Figure 1 (cartoon, rainbow, N blue to C red):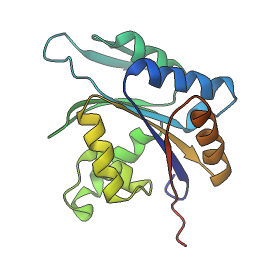
Figure 2 (figure 1 turned 180 degrees about the vertical axis):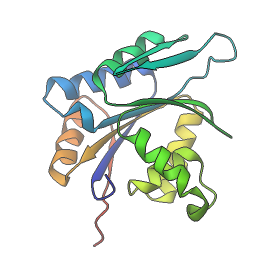
Figure 3 (figure 1 turned 45 degrees about the horizontal axis):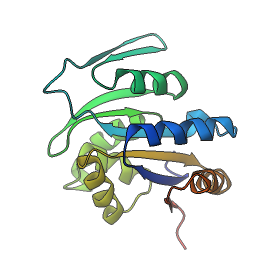
Amino acid sequence: MSNEDSAVAIFSNHEEAEKAVKELQKSGFDMKRLSIVGKDYHTEEHVTGYYHAGDRMKYWGKMGAFWGGLWGILFGAAFFWVPGIGPLVVAGPLVAAIVGGLEGAVAIGGLSALGAGLYSIGIPKDSIIHYETSIKSDKFLLVAHGSADEVARAKGILESIGHEVTIHSTRQG
């Protein structure tokens, strides 16, 4: 994934994020190339958990229907506790990037697990700070991964439904 581009959109709530995922799915975007990150900010008030059984992931908590629905169409899922951010739920290829980023986090220096994962897919540190701040504010990140053409297509779809999208390229120059 490190030689692919990424299109990143920030959503104020899970309804907007879910609508965007469904719009991308409806337009034929490859769901295996889509990631979503959100903070599960109700864990102190409600029982939260998940389990993985084969290809199926089950989640319960205040936003269980939202995450359960996304895990049905996105590839890969995880729950991380990130110091300074709190509990994060992640679905899609970004899960592997975060796990891989954890292994290289010492070399990256000062980045959280989420930041290390974003950095490993070519997102610059100044953008990582912006995205982590958004997550801390209970917003959701949607990341489309792929070739320049795939990412541009995802950007066009997301902009057509009224969302600002930033493209990050791993290619220099």
